[in-house]
Length: 157
Image (cartoon, rainbow, N blue to C red; front, side, top):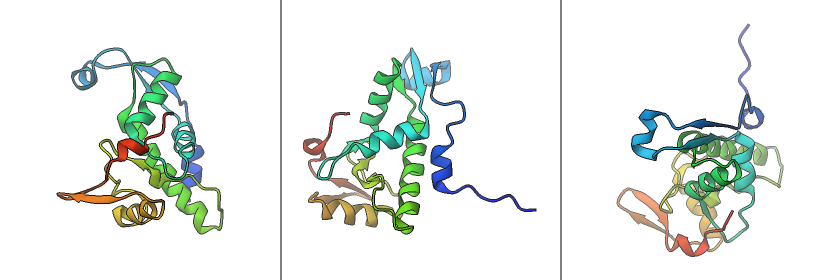
């Protein structure tokens, strides 16, 4: 019997043994320094993404910093924070397709530097469309798309 695939919402709610704070490994310390790293739970990342009101933005960097403060860690894990933002985005679209109106506004969460996330549902085109509908101006820089003057719209988490 084939194993049923988990829905995006089920993946979002699957916290396993997270969050947890660990010592930064020697391999990680070359890039991130010393101290501790918080590996957040998926729902923690989603909760921070939900706090961004219409017309405002956040980057994964601000989300990682907020997670680090919450857990008294040196940094928030860049890898899992990015993966969980992607899961939150897909869970939101899954809910939207079911007619649920109160979804996580994932399109307001940008990559570091104000860059749109090509891995979000619908790719850069869909995120650009949603951001522009909220009054943001998206510009192309090389192969990447960024929100012009995104720093002015950042929300403090």
